[in-house]
Structures are given as C-alpha cells and as structure tokens.
Amino acid sequence: MKPIWIVDDDQSIRFVLEKALLRENLPTRSFTSPREVLQALDHASEDDLPQILVSDIRMPGGSGLELLTKVKERMPMLPVIIMTAFSDLDSAVSAFQGGAFEYLPKPFDLPKAVELIRRAVDESQREQAQSDLQDETPEMLGQAPAMQDVFRAIGRLSQSHVTVMITGESGSGKELVARALHKHSPRGDTGTKGPFVAINTAAIPKDLLESELFGHERGAFTGAQATRRGRFEQAEGGTLFLDEIGDMPFDLQTRLLRVLSDGNFYRVGGHSAIKANVRVIAATHQDLEKRVKEGAFREDLFHRLNVIRLRLPALRERREDIPTLTRHFLQQSAQQLGVEPKRISDAAQLRLNQFNFPGNVRQLENICHWLTVMAPAQVIEPKDLPPEVLGLANESGPLAQHVMEDDATLAQAHDDGVQVATSKSTISPVVLNLPGADWEQGFEAEAMSLLVAGRTDVWDAMVNRVEARLIQTALANTRGRRIEAAQKLGIGRNTITRKIQELGIEE
Image (cartoon, rainbow, N blue to C red; front, side, top):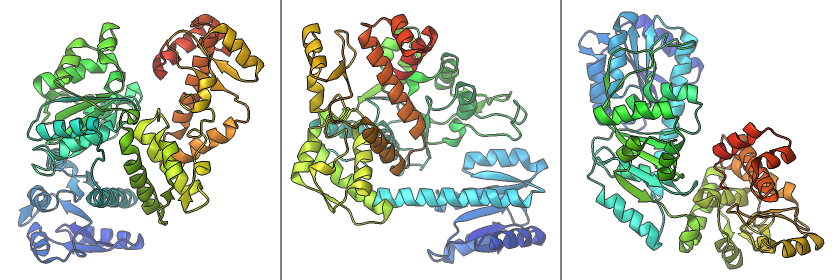
C-alpha cells in the first residue's frame, strides 16, 4: 500500500498521527516543510508516491495552500487533507477551491482524524479502480447508427462549454454520455482536469437537496455542525451532472435558474455570494415540455438547460449492439468477481437479442451480473437466462401476446386460465399469474441481479416496480377510474394520485 504523507512542522502532531495510522496498518512518511515534499515527489518511485497527503497550512518555509496547488498540478486525483487551527478556518475553506478533500481542525480528536484519513484512502482506492477500468475498456460501446450520431455530437461539443440536456429512458446510459462530454471538453482530462460531479435530484429528499447542491454554513440548521461544500463547489472548474432534473422541486428550480443566470449562489445560511465556475449537464427521462405545460417545471429554466439536446436511444432501438454489450458486461462481471468470464451460446444470444429491455443497458448489465453468478455452466444456454428474458411475468416477452384488448377475447383468455389486466387506454398490458410461471422466482432473480450489481437502492427499485404494476393493473381493471382503483387496492384516493405522479405512470 502506498504511504500517507504527513506535512507539519510540529513534531508532536507528526508523532501522534504516525502512531495512530500505524495501528490501522496504514504506512506513513513525514515531512517538516512543503519544500521537502516537493523534493520527495521529484525523486519518488511509483510505489513511494503518496496515497493521501495530510498537510498543515502555516509552516516555516512555505504555505500548505501553495503546496496544495503544486501537488494538484502533478497529481490531480490525490486526496489532500488540510490541517488548520480554528483561526485559519477561512483559509481552509478557500482551499477547497484548489481541490482539497477535507479540512481537519486543530486541536483534533484523534479517532475522528483517523476516520477521515481512512475515508480518504477508501475514496482514493475507488477512484483508482474506476480509472483502471476506464483505461482498459472503451468509454461507450455502440456501432448502431443511432449511437454513432451520439458519438458525433460528443465530438462536435468537445471544445464547448455549452449547457447540454440529455434525454432518454431510464437505464439508457445518460450519465455515461455526460461523463464523455466532460472528459472530452476543455474542463476534462484533455483540459484543466476539473472534476465531474453527479447528483440524482430524484434520489435525495427535498429537505436535503438544497444543502446537497449549494452546501451550508455551520449552524444553518439542526445538525449542521460544520461548514459543508455543496456539489456546485465540489465541481468547481469542472462539470456538474444533474440527473433526473425533471423531478427537482419547484422552489429549488428557482435557485438553480439564478445560478445559471448570474453564476452566483449562496450556501444555506450563508450571506456571501460564491462564484460558480461550473458547466451544467442535465438529464431526464421525462417529457419536460409536458411538465412545463402542467406547471411542474419552470419554462425559463427549461430554456436555460435546453441549449443543446442529445437524445439517447433505447436499447431496443440499437439491437445490433446487444451482443457486443453482452460480451463486455460478462467480462466486466467476471473481473469484478475474480472468476473466469462466461461465454454465451448463439441460441442464448439470439433469445437475448429478441428481448425488449424495458430497463435498457442497465438491465442488460444486471442480467450479465446475474448470469455470471447463477448460470451453472461456463457456456450460457437459453435455459440459463433469467425469467424476465424467457417471457415469464414480463409484458415484453412472448407470453404477453396472450393479452387481448376486446372484451370477448379477454373473457376467453380468462376461461383458458390466463389472468390478464388490460385496457383500451394507453396503459401497458400487464400479465399476471401465467400458467406455469413462478413469479416469486422471477422476483427473487431480479433482486439477486441488482444485489450482485452492487446497487444500494434495491428496496426502493423493487418496491416501486411492484407498486407501479399494482396500480397499472387496478387502473386497467377500472378503465382508468382512480377512485375505484384505489378502493379495490385498499388505499386512499390521495395515495394513488401521489403514487401515479411519483412513479410516472401513464394513464
């Protein structure tokens, strides 16, 4: 493991940190001045370079802030922790503009200091793992004409700072496009090397989203025991990716519009304007023009964000890419799990190509994770595919063709033992309890695929899908009458209305 470099002219500080980190099996190397650090960097081998740099601000022979700037020029991904006395707090906060990971106020609580350094180590290792993976594989895969159009658009925007809106279905890879736009822009790897910071506005509670975006001052609200930088400050000089922007609360849309208009914002509880040097890329799976007409999204913000629009195709619109993506994800899953990559037979690949992938590329990735864990042999056959691909309890599979929209056929289907829910409205047909289909097994398989993929929102993802199917089925049964559907489901009228909005159910 690479060492943690400690820079402080106070011998007692160096001694205490060295001993505490040694007990955590974390190697260290200590310096008394920034000049020593820069000289060591000039002569250090790859294994001797620091994994974390912990530096005081005020030292004889140089400033910790100047050291931060020079080290970041050489090692932009290196996490740097600034140690400071309380009187230097303003200097420490300003150091964040130079890319500091966090500050450590003196006198510090030793366990908390070790915990902070451990967190920086974990972050460094994650960044290195992601960097290695990106170096080994292409950023994005796709030979389909629709994807080639996306690649050309990224190329045309490579020297631009313009705001971009990415639209596409959930799971189609909008964040990958945003990362590619950042990487190939003047702010990315080929430019000033500013950070890429992403936030899903739909995944954070409304009460916390403002603080997440703009940060907060110490004492701004209950629990705010320290000043915290928001995502705009974290993305200084780089790109801020706002995913699912269509779900942003209306009052926060006003604050975002102000930042995009004049480039300044205030932390929660703050009184000093902070300049935002950030490129904003937004993404949504929703129809924002429709949201504007409904009064749920500000029209002026829509026009601010919609300078350049990129539409990402669904996976079913680029089926020729499915085999390449399948091989890539199987290789990736095997590498993550430390096993031999599995191969997929032509017959199984053909069956996979015919699936409609309502979850798009993310669903294919999850399926490949599932196959890496669950398929019994080294070669994947059609029988090894998960239930949703084989058409069990899935409206995009061949068994969904049993659903008929006229009442006579519906009655006949019911007599034949096929229970269906359908409607002449725009609600998608939903297949329930098909003969021989073990829906619980399919449900378990899908949950397993998400868990293996490392998702941390499995509960919400699965519960939301179940709730959406229940409501769709009830609405289909009542021909779209909400109150009657709510009564049959045993929930309140307000509850079904709220769920329809939250889950994006079309009627």
